[in-house]
Every structure is written in C-alpha cells, then in structure tokens.
Amino acid sequence: MTNVATEKEIIHSIRNQLPQLLHEDPSLRDHILTIFHERFPTRVETEDRFTRMLNELRRDRKEQTRKWEEQARKWEDQTRRWEEQKREDDRKWAEQARKWEEQKREDDRKWAEQARKWEEQKREDDRKWEEQARKWEEQKREDNRKWEEQKQEDRKRWEESNRRFDETHKEIMAQAVKHERSIGALGSRWGLQSERAFRDALAAILEGSFGVQVINVNEFDDKGEVFGRPDQVEIDVIIKNGLMIICELKSSVSKSDMYLFERKARFYEKRRGRKANRLMVISPMIDDRAREVGEKLGIEMYFDSMYVPVEP
Image 1: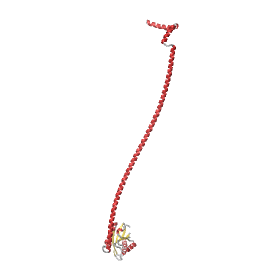
Image 2: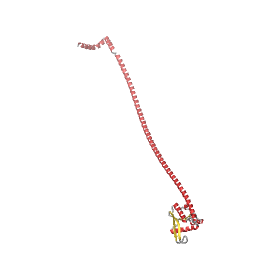
Image 3: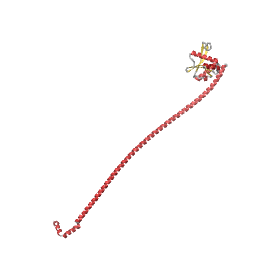
Image 4: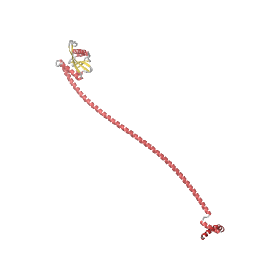
C-alpha cells in the first residue's frame, strides 16, 4: 500500500510541479522535450504531418471523388451503352421477329400457292385422264362402230353379191323362160302349144315377180256388146293396193285383137261400175298395126311380163 501511495503521490506531485519546473529549469524542459521529441513529433511536425495527412486525405478524397465520378460516368456511359445496346437488340429482335413473321407469312403463302398449284395440277391431271379415258372410250366405240359398219358393209356386199348372183341367175332363167315363151308363142301360133298354157306362164311371171294375183274372169255377155252376139267374155284382172288393172295375156296380138281387148275392158268396167286404172297388153308378138291402135286407145303394151311396172 505504501509503494502504491508513493507512486500516486509522485505522479500527483509531478503533475503539480512539472509546469513550474519546466518554466524554471530550462535544462529539464529541454531534457523532457528531447525525450518527447525522440518519442513524439513536435507541434510543427505534428501540424505539418497533420496538414500533409489532410492534404493527402483531401487529394485522396478528390482523387476518390474523381474516380467515383469517373466510375459513375463510366457506369452511366456503360448503362447508356447497355440501354442503347438493349434498345438496338430489342429493335433487332423486333426486326428479326418481323422478318420471321413476314418469312412465315411468305412461306405460308408459298405453301398455300404450291398446294393450290398441286390441287390445280391434280384436277388438270384428273381432267386429262378423264378426257383420255373418254377419248379411249369414244375411240373404242368408234372402232366398234367401224367394225360393225365394216361387218354390215361386208354383209351387204355379200348379200349384194348373192343378190346379183340371184338376179343374174333370175335374168338367165328369165331369158330362158322368155325364149321358151317366144318359142311357145310360135308354137301357139302354129298350133304346137295351147294359148291357155302360154297365158298361165305369163300370169305366173307377174305373180312371182310383183306379188300380185292375176284373176281370170269369165262372164257371159247376154247383150252381145263384145262379139256382136251373146257369148262368154274371158279377161284377166290384177288388183293391187286398191288399183284395178285389166290386162290381156296372149302369145300374139293383131289389130282386131287390140280392138277386141278394148271392148272386153269396157264391158268389165260397165259390169263392175268402176273404171280401170290401167289397160295393158302383154305379148311377145304385137303387130305394128295393133301397136298403133293400142297407142290411140291408151293401152300399155309390153313385150314380156317381166318388164311390166306394176305401179303406174
């Protein structure tokens, strides 16, 4: 306790006595200043150091402020560049999006156009195939028609050939029959063949060639209008399609025979109460004077029954 109190007392005494001692004893003051100077800077040094520190702090602050301002300016420039870059990127993205949209619309339009062309091409191909199929069908029908026409033409030619052959055969046979009739007429003329047989032959030719029926009419003339006295009157009549044709079928006809035929025809017309449409004489031997009479009386004359036109 004594030591502690003494130290306190010493410290208290130094505090109380030191200012006076420093004032009264310059050597002590110098000694203390030397000690302090060795350990602590002087006021001037302290002030200089403090001033330097303030100046350094001021310079550091200015530099720091400059740096902060520079950094802020750089940040502003960077931010501005970022904003500009962002706006440019946004513009580019918008432009790219617009181009993509336009490209998409163009692609859609091209695809739609291509699809339309494909559809039109398909319709055109279908139309061409249908047209080709129609042409093939028409060609087939035309070929079939030509084939049928050719077959019909061949059939007609064959039938025509057969018909000509038959006609030639008939003509040959008709010529043979005509010659036989001519010979028969001569025979009848000279008593070698009966007139009835010759008449029946001519009637058969008419019926076979023209499909008519020759009716042999035999009536009694009680007033003698034909022969000048009562007698049987024999005459041939053809009825076809309402027409009445009175004809004479004989091996030979003279002038008197022509007048006699005309009287028999008028007798038959009077009996039937109807006028004949035609009067005709068929004979291979008609006298020239008989022909003159026949022309005057309006009587048709034919050399053979095969040359008779049934229709007027």
